[in-house]
Length: 225
Ligand SMILES: Nc1ncnc2c1ncn2[C@@H]1O[C@H](COP(=O)(O)OP(=O)(O)OP(=O)(O)O)[C@@H](O)[C@H]1O
Ligand SMILES: [Mg+2]
Image (cartoon, rainbow, N blue to C red; front, side, top):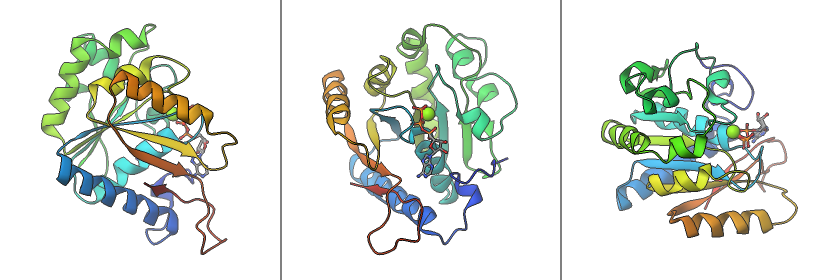
């Protein structure tokens, strides 16, 4: 069921540096979970296209490969991408669950990796921020937090719309994705300030698309701090 695009872990040999970097990210998140006891994690970033969805999906895959029960939620209602990336059939999703049109069990899609479930966006909805801030959304997230070891939410960039700020208040931890080589750090600084103002608990920053120092042969690398 995993589409073999080259940024998805399904298309990479398990021994490559790209895979290894996601294992390192998984290890750091597991260590943080053991210390701080959380299960919901928002993946966001300051700019469009920095790799939020790529990080969310690959983290979901690598965590499930370690037998963690993972729910991967597409909470980017404006530009849903996970359904297409994973070639999910059309069906109900987060919007339908929040609107009472579907149950969580009906909307969660089981993937080939046994412990990985995906909640796509489902129906389109014009008022994303309002839906994400609804009590139904809080209830659905609470339900998933009880049932899964890790609930990963993909979101739009912080600056563009209110959604990421709204989501950051609901989840227990937030990760910021930054693409290496971004020219000025100002958008990231503004994003961090606005997330902190919203009450987000920032777990760390993932730098996407960097070359490891000891090798020029790898095309992609992720680090976590
Ligand atoms: N490490 C990487 N190496 C090469 N290509 C990458 C890498 N990370 C992401 N990409 C590519 O960059 C593009 C944007 O990635 P992605 O959709 O994950 O970003 P995003 O932050 O979710 O974007 P949006 O803000 O539109 O939601 C995609 O084509 C993806 O395949
Ligand atoms: Mg995205």
